[in-house]
Length: 209
Ligand SMILES: C[S@@+](CC[C@H](N)C(=O)[O-])C[C@H]1O[C@@H](n2cnc3c(N)ncnc32)[C@H](O)[C@@H]1O
Ligand SMILES: Nc1nc2[nH]cc(C(=O)O)c2c(=O)[nH]1
Ligand code: SF4
Ligand SMILES: [Mg+2]
Image (tube, rainbow, N blue to C red; front, side):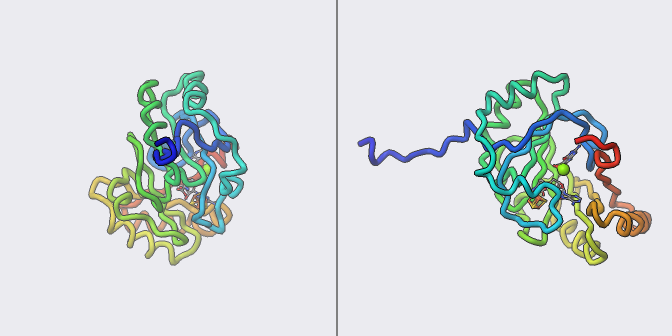
């Protein structure tokens, strides 16, 4: 009968591009120490993505979850950011279970383009024009973080703000190469529309990972 048994694809290991202990640079948790787990694989295709090396999952070694968690707990912080790549291209159930068992808070960075898996303490959804976010993920967002590349992105941001919960915090973040032009527009927009907040990629100004 072994031949007819379903072969479960194991998530006891995931493609890992890099992991590092730093300061959360963006959004609601800006300024807090956090260990970053950057998983490989993304097919969303943002032309301005600041981590295109993450896109091809096959370029990154599969690392056992137990080894990832051991690397986290070797550091004093217990906040863990799972990012990528697009982390929701993987089933993250076992990773978040293991992080919780190790006493960690799990924070997700996602485009929302794939169904949510895992048990999260904080979910940041950064929707993309290139592959639409799922309504089911938008509803669960603690934070909506819209990257502003040009003026038209303010209208697009409002369209997505209309799809999140009443509890969701709203952020506008300048696309890094466009920050000199877009940051002043974001400042004016937030002053006129105070339910939004400014998010900057502060780690880039601090010159840390
Ligand atoms: C590299 S993405 C990985 C997680 C997920 N794929 C996503 O896009 O949310 C992490 C965060 O960086 C943001 N980001 C990526 N490239 C950026 C850029 N050039 N300028 C500003 N933010 C950027 C994304 O919007 C997202 O909020
Ligand atoms: N310091 C720091 N904060 C971040 N917040 C989100 C990041 C990401 O790439 O997901 C990121 C990152 O790459 N570095
Ligand atoms: S979804 Fe995230 S990782 Fe994928 S291309 Fe866009 S910014 Fe980069
Ligand atoms: Mg980054």
